[in-house]
Amino acid sequence: MSSRNRIPELSAIPWQGPAAITQYAQTGRDLCRDLGEEFATGADELYAVLIRSFRGHPVLALMGAPDVKLRARRVVKRLKRAAELERGAGVELVKFHAQFRREFVDILPQAKPEKRKSTFNWNDV
View 1 (spheres, one colour):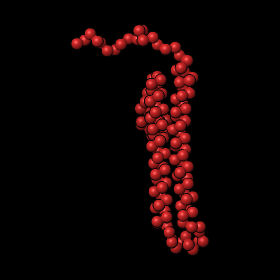
View 2: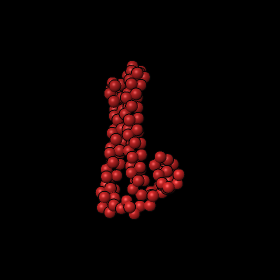
View 3: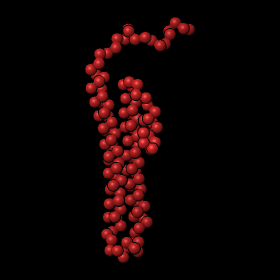
View 4: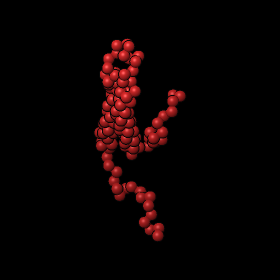
């Protein structure tokens, strides 16, 4: 394992069957969606801050730099691209789960309900 910590929401899920893989895919998708939305919101906020902070900046004006809005759009474009990639990662996790079901779960025979042992005792009143 690397020196960096793993994501606790995902690393705490034990690989103990199809339910765990479903939970892993759902949790990962939710994290990707949240991170993508955070990046998109951060990009909008950062654009406003850059425009407000650097408009009429003397050093940028002396260097013959392009307009502050153009510079801010270039910077924020990277953050928006990161947001799109996170949304794409969420989609890939849905595809991961579907592929797992297609390759393993759907081809296995279904367990017979009458052969399953019930853990709940209906006679214990």
